[in-house]
Image: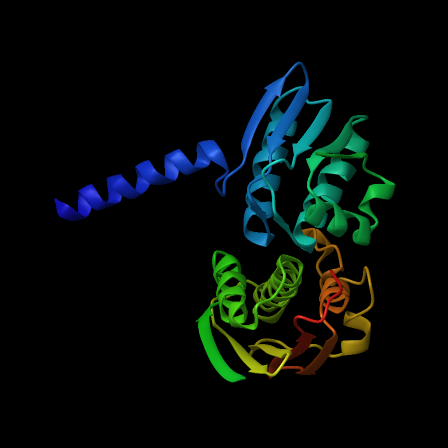
Amino acid sequence: MREDRKKRNRRDRRGARTAAAGRSAVMTLENGSLLIRVPEELDHHSAAQISARADQLIKEQDVREVVFDFSGTTFCDSSGIGMLMGRYKIMQALGGSVRAVKVQDRVERILLLSGVMRVIPVERI
Amino acid sequence: MKNQMRLEFDSISANEAFARVTTAAFMTQMNPSMEEVADVKTAVSEAVTNAIIHGYRGEVHKIVITGEIEEEWLKLTVEDQGVGIADVEKAMEPLYTTRPELERSGMGFLFMEAFMDEVRVESEPGKGTVVFMKKRIGCQEA
């Protein structure tokens, strides 16, 4: 019983965090535009999850544009670059586009260093 | 000031965050800038991700991080006992990757080198890989 309650509490807390800036990404599809709210920390772990979910949506729905919202993201490593370039290649093949918006300083530095900004439009926060 | 730490954990992707946050906590006693902490977190994340994906190829084994503070220097090692790297020089070339199907950008070592003052790799096929990294803390101009 106690264990159950503990688990439930943990789940509740996680739910509350996701609404703010938790680890899992919120995705919304509207008029062919897939908006992905990137989590606070974008690494191999979170990037793999986002890529899998996004690709599923792109496959099943009419997605013409993928917009990555980085407003809540403070950490990004090279796995994030892989995620962006991977979606860019898929959307390019489908005649669609990818862009990154509301990018903070630290993430911008990573995007600059990687050269990803040469192919994907990036807007600062 | 002198201080040491050793951290051992399973090579699962959820531990990437654990590894970089723990390393960041260890270096706080050096009174680093936010930029320096972010630099170290990125470098650690890259090395640990490499160990998980390339060293152990997704299998679960142990990764060991050691940290040492010596005056203004932070020294880190990230070690796996995985498949190893036959050609370290090639592996460190920007954009080179053996796993493009996993969307590896080939920028892991580039980022480690960009954010640390020194990066050295020792590896032996079949034995494993150790990444040695050093960064001088508290010496950045504001």
